[in-house]
Image 1 (tube, rainbow, N blue to C red):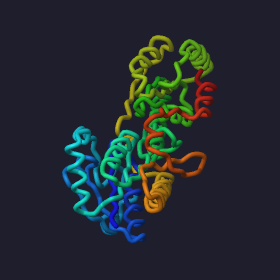
Image 2 (image 1 turned 135 degrees about the horizontal axis):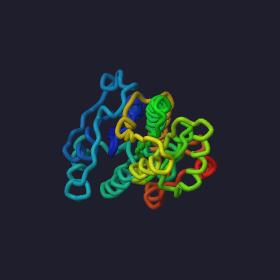
Image 3 (image 1 turned 120 degrees about the horizontal axis):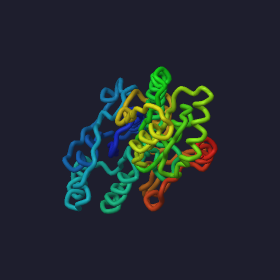
Length: 320
């Protein structure tokens, strides 16, 4: 029996530990492991190679994904999906593990329904915006990368009596910004999920400055498109010289944290247990309240992720 793994969409720290554990699990369970390089594009173009221990030796500490990733418009065309299937068929691969987000899962759900394949999705995105799971692989490392950056920015903000607006990634989800703001002690946090009460914030911050505050940190989620607006607001309403730092793709990089390495191991174990025990398998592994479970892709695809209510309560307490 053969099984393959590939990364799809945006990369994140934690993918390489998952790839390492994939090879080890496959060989331990008597399966032949394959890498599909460069995601769905590699699946179409037959960039598929059998893997062994030497391929994953010394990769657990590396960020990103050694097998590459991509986004594919061609995969929407049946002609190319059929080509991808023929590539798998020649190698007798009928089981797939996908590291990616809900878009990748939806694509694989269509593909595997068409050609009677089994697949398991492992949520891997720093955005943490996949419905049905409280945690996605790569999030902890991304939060730690943001923490390092914000802590460093605070040093210079305090030295020069400035405000800093720090933009985080996350697409339309404010999870990274919210958790980073709470854990860094930022004075302002702007996320798509809740409208900011800037009048109230102005009164609070102005009073703090009167009482000796020397700097202001404002964390902005990219999905709000409010980074420049907040810079102007801080300069005009709070009268502080303001700088903007867009963290960008450093949030996707870095050595995987201890937590992401552990989670990669557990996600892979759950994926193998499911794909080998279920007669039909088109599901994703999800993680909620310290428990792993399986969820149908249709359920994930037809619902929208929402930030945990308890986190939103913290936002309302600290920033409204």
